[in-house]
Length: 177
Image 1 (cartoon, rainbow, N blue to C red):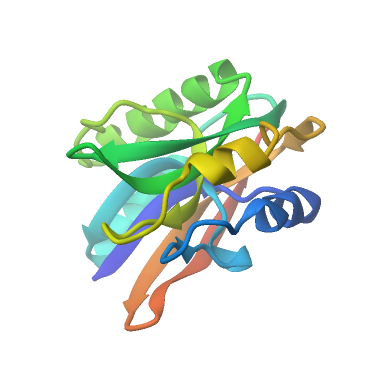
Image 2 (image 1 turned 30 degrees about the vertical axis):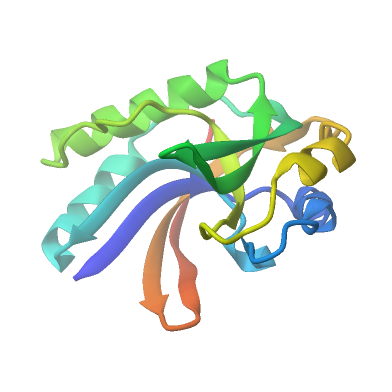
């Protein structure tokens, strides 16, 4: 079985900006450089046959390249407690369009539609209940903005869960054109 997701890997200067913003929350599990990505669609566990179908379907997705930029830091909550810190991007419209095309391609090969609302973001940290407050990071980040960067491809990733955390590897890249 293969645990798959579709994502955009930010260019190295953007990853360095994200890494520099990390810190200031005790007990946070910060993402490593090779884990930084913007998920377009989580797929989950699939067999080899479906993985091949997914690869073929994603190869048919067409959209022109576009620019996005980092524009803020935020957090997700679960039961009133912050459980993840993320970097937001703008503008969201080309990402929503690409998400919709990826979702449509996946449903043509039997992968059910995404049931969660799509909020374009890059996860920076996962938080435990005992983690410190996110308030200091949000104040210190100054909004975490970047110059625009070009998104000219997306990728199919495989995720291997290990005792030290998830290890992501790119299975295939798909150019935008």
